[in-house]
Length: 361
Image (cartoon, rainbow, N blue to C red; front, side, top):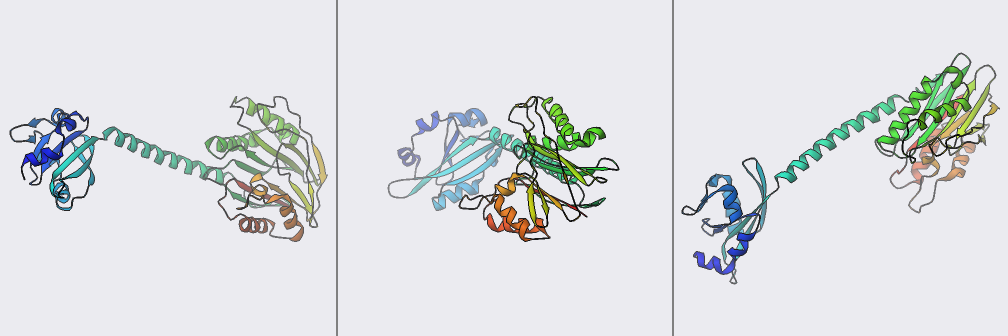
């Protein structure tokens, strides 16, 4: 088979106009054509019909394989400091004979560089996200007793980072503060808001911490002072248990579902008027209420990921199911809610789920 037979099947003028590097080899693996793009980039000796940089730049085994099998083979070649995606396609005449191969070299150096940068950035972001997630979990309160209050909780972020935050802490000898908050979203911004809440509440003056209304007002003042976008906001229910008076004073910044006080398997919603903490509400007012707590009572705080969880039929878990559990069970409340929730939702969790249980002993 001579070059003329390849000429009948290949338009060298078209190949010469292609911006990619192109070379043609006959069935004896001899280079019979190199287009102008390859000649300009690698240099070409028209007498020896080889690139000046040397034939060792190319993998002859791939060419042999394409000539033997007639298959189209894709590979990558490193030429100098450049990376090329190479497609080796057989030239076949009407009789089915393999006359040679056309190899097209596409420069993908920039694409591979950007790909590597993207992989490196993703790896960095993953490491940063994992570190942030670990910090979020570490700042959650300890389970167990604070004075005569027993603290337990369940914390299930829908992604690595959560927009939920809760805490139980001793303010002074007489008062124990507690809250649950839910920031819009699940990413870095939401997680940073949760850390803001944690830091701000813990560093407020004790006289402010002892007043739910003052605490929420101060949180609102400091948060709006950040001048974040209007879509960044959070809800927060904050309460204070007085050890001497056995009272629980609370205010609510738009948090739903409302916390429950459960006594002898009967639940009461802790209702208090107040808007979410957001730049949209510049001068909010928070209602402050007070109830008595007795030994055996417990407070159940939740984020909306519990009641708004849906099954495959798009049906919400709902408030009535939660009420049914707290009225039917006298212990292991969190486990029972979680078990029924997992059985109900047969699809992937889409929202953060947090439940805080504070029992009076």
